[in-house]
Each structure stands twice: as C-alpha cells, then as structure tokens.
Image (cartoon, rainbow, N blue to C red; front, side, top):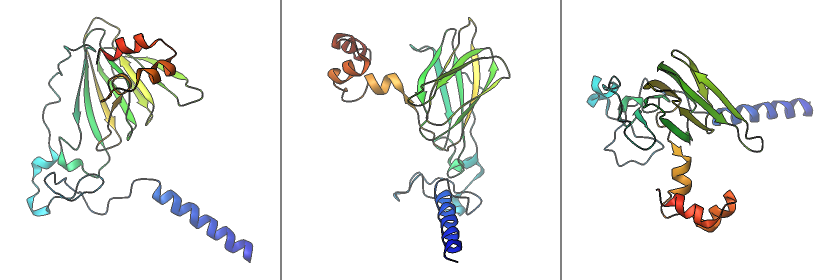
Amino acid sequence: MASTWFFLLALLAVSISNAFASDPSQLQDFCVADKMSQVLVNGFACKDPAAITVEDFFFSGLHMAGNTSNRQGSAVTGVNVAQISGLNTLGISLARVDYAPYGLNPPHIHPRATEILTVLEGSLYVGFVTSNPENKLFTKVLNKGDVFVFPQGLIHFQFNYGTKDVIALAALSSQNPGVITIANAVFGSKPFISDDILAKAFQVEKKIVDRIQAQF
C-alpha cells in the first residue's frame, strides 16, 4: 500500500513539474498588449476588450526589402508583439531577413525561441552550434523553398555566399524571442568587458582584443 502511494505521489510530482515547465495554456481568446499600462507583468497587461480593434492584429510592410547597406550586409524586419499587439501571450512571431550579396546574419542566439527559416529567394549557407562540451557544428546550403530549424538558445547564422540578393522568412516560437549577437555582446558591451578577461578567454594578446573592441 505504501509503495502504491509513493508511486502516485511521484507521478503527481512529475505531472506538476511538467505543467510548470512550459508556457501556460490560453485562458481566453486573446490578450492584446496594453503598451500604456503601468502594471508590471511578464510580457504585457491585457488591453480593455472594449478598446480592441482589428488593427491590433495587423501589420503591413513585409513586402518591402530591409536596408542591407551596413557592415554585415543584412537586415532583419521583425514582426513581434512590438509591431502587433495582438501577439501578446500567443507565443509566435515572424521576421523577414534580407541579405545583400555576401551578406551575413552574424552568429547570434534567440534566448526565448526556436526559429524555423524558409528561403523565399536565392540560396543561403546556414548553421548552428550545439552546447558544451561537444560544440558540434551543423551546416546546410538552403535553396529557394528549403526550410531549416535553429533550436532555441543555440548560436546560429546565415550567409549569402552568392552574387544575388536573398530573402528569407523566419517564424519564432515567442511573441518576443529576443536576440543576442555574439560579437556585439562580447566585444561591444557597455561598459566593455575587461580586455584581460577577453584575452584570456580567447587566448590572444590584449592588443588584438582592443582592436576588435574599437570596431564597436
């Protein structure tokens, strides 16, 4: 009898753990973000239903190419809760990514989302790296219509190795996936991470770190 109760309690504990380990289910049809609210919550407070309009669920602009005239030669046009208030609590967002010839979406992570990317025009060389200690690199050349998944929290990149513009569309499993560009975070933090620390971490001379930091 005692062993049966122990089993049931263990099963209950596992069930509760799983319930709290993922996003909660929707408790209503939607919760349009009230961006003027002073209430501090994880995300945004809900807008008064009487004030909700169809525009809260709408965005226009993904037909327009982003400005790729920058050092990386790429541009990301995000469509998340910042652009569509109706995405609040729905756990999804989009991004259009434009790549100039030899343009790069540099190594970065999305701390709160898995990404699934579809190439609409052109070809891309893409990849991601697994976590320590393996740090295994998975890469693939994608052509028009191909789809690739970047698991949540893993460093990944996309590179246009050709001479024509490339367009891709990414879906992400968060209303606000976040992005941390590795080079910007490591070498462009405010204030800078000590060059002594970075020199030791990357096993290079401090003057090399200083030269890289100066680019940011």
